[in-house]
Length: 263
Image (cartoon, rainbow, N blue to C red; front, side, top):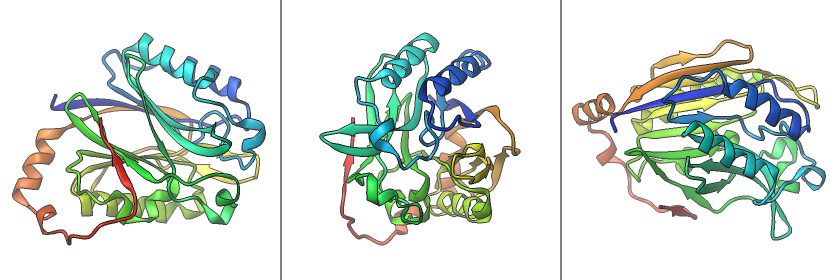
């Protein structure tokens, strides 16, 4: 499948209220166009970026996972975003990728945001995730991962690099610049989906969600308000660009600590 239709949900999250956020997204889902292939939700989309996992964490058999499966099946689309998950007495900032048939893949955030003390309450992930969906290879990552290019290095020939985030507006220049850098160095479509509004800690988020083309040009840039943005990306155009400017084969060879999850 050469084309992928994507809907980005740049939302103002309700602080630490999972049921209210699920209800909000259920209503927002009604606005998406038929035939959408992928819905992208922000980091910690049920709670905001909270450091209170002991009171907020769910399990992989909890309400949010069941809700994601129901919504994906009802709309016949994949849905992704991160939530707080407890597993084996550890808490994770976990990205869930839910296929229309209910199958779930997951990625635990590798780089925990030390400025907010995320590493004190969450356990870091050890594996990257490569999702194969409708002929596309997709690498989903979370927020602070954006600052560490080795972790997103395109040694897997992926087509789309995806970040879900709660990235404060005061670091907006870094957000946009790093998204463009990741797109350029990996010659891949790169999406950064951020939230809007002010969270329970007083941090302000301006959205700034972006689709960056494989050549580093921003083709979609969302304004600072809650909204749903829908667009289509084309793999053939990216393949032509990579063939014309074949930089990826010239990458240095080295290994990183971690492993890749494949289907």
